[in-house]
Image 1 (cartoon, helix red, strand yellow):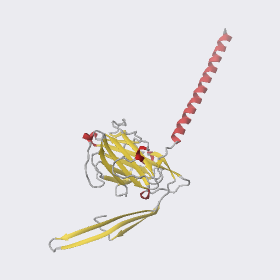
Image 2 (cartoon, rainbow, N blue to C red):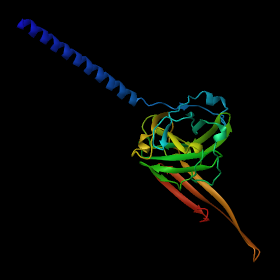
Image 3 (tube, helix red, strand yellow):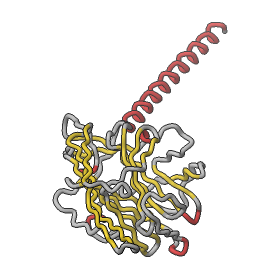
Image 4 (spheres, rainbow, N blue to C red):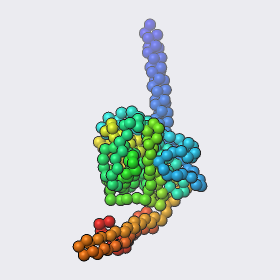
Length: 296
């Protein structure tokens, strides 16, 4: 009887060890698959040649229908991280000239909030933001926002959440009200972006999308990065690009101003420009021609 009991206990022990070994193997395989999934970086769609896009705030060109849309927005202000109550369909592709972004914001048109303001004015209204981690490593990036009505806000970003709103880039964006909501359409030239030198043909950039919904007093984003978390720039969604090289960047801002003295009946005209030349990613030369400090 004792021998039988010992035999049964031994069999149970062997069975337990086998079950534990199987569970350990399954857990190991699951962890490996999750790690592999994290290492897979999606590629942005590249369009060779001319995209034939008329930047007008409407996604009616045929090329937009070839680009897959993504959403994934969550509420980050207030910081609930709940799924967004309305769809936001974002499409992104690039050419050798730059990045095109099209965003369809589904919303009842009776609830739209459009307010015209000067550049870089913060105000509650409907707007869309794209931020780009150009370094691919969370070191520096750019923020570009267009509001319904075409008012713009932009700035540079340093890790993790240091914004410099003094920067004005030569990107373009337009909006329009359409059936079922409103559309934002961007073009961001590569010549504006400081891309690091890399070895090989493939590079990574990070992308962060944000939508402000004025009538709800809410802000949504993908990835969900509320101001209550420490990570921001380094947590952007990574995408892979192919065969895009840094370009010499030159930006200029001409101006014309005039004054009139009604007492002496005298008029004075002034003209000049601010020129910024970036021959490499870590060097920038600035030139002022007859500067008007009221303009700068």
